[in-house]
Amino acid sequence: MTGDEASEAGGHSDTRCGFVALVGAPNAGKSTLVNALVGAKVSIVSHKVQTTRVPVRGIAMVGASQLVFVDTPGIFAPRRRLDRAMVGAATSSAGDADVVVLLVDSVKGLDESVERLMGVLEPLKAPRVLALNKVDKIPKPRLFELASTFSARLAFERTFMISALSGSGVGDLRDWLATRIPLGPWHYPDDEISDATERATAAEITREKIYTYLHEELPYQTTVETTGWEEKKDGSVRIEQIVFVERESQRRIVLGEGGSAIKKISMTSRKELAKLFERPVHLFLHVQVREGWGDDPERYREMGLEFPKA
Image (cartoon, rainbow, N blue to C red; front, side, top):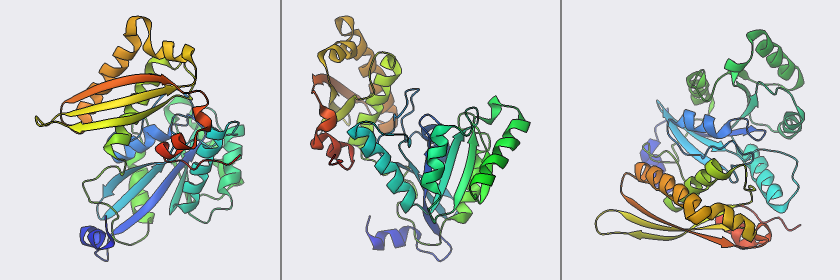
């Protein structure tokens, strides 16, 4: 979208637009929260840690305010090159945001992962908000104790107690953020909910289904690329994707006995994509072994990540 188009979409003096980075430890519930804030699925959700690899932008309108939520990869102690790229993307997104929301799993509290996050957030100049998640799982006295502990360690403008899964408290957080972002024209049309391309979204949905069915057996170093996209005359779309794994044993897991696993993954992904894109989808999945793809710069470019040199 050009600057002129953005001005036309929301260029009045009373409009607001800002980027809100959601940061947290792996599995804190960031993807669930961004979907709840947007009111639609824009980020994949999995029980597997470190599912989000690149910052995902979800867009929500609250009156004259356009909130651009950035679902960042979980910040953790990186061990591999892919880990370093993910953590680098998350840290960069937090540094560029207008407001930063620290999402904490209230059940886990102030553990080692969150301690590391506090160190990352401390030098940032953007306003910080604390969101204690999964509040329905612990007693209220414990919640208030947690809020006091965090406030004593780092300055937060506000503290919200929420359940991203049920939606409790999410509206209050969204409404407050809408008043805190800067005045300015909207960056996106008011009916847009994400800046991700359809090809990228399709790849992420399939990756989610792989984790749903195989997360116990399969390492998270599995990636999906959309390699073919053909618009058909009947309004449907033909999508071809490659699932990259690192070893032949992993390829057999993804395929399943007699192709049972890949058929289930393909069917559930196709159904969700058809609903998401509001048209019939013909999905064709191929599984390839690419040893050491985690050290291949081309794979990082496909995912939208910077390739760490070392």
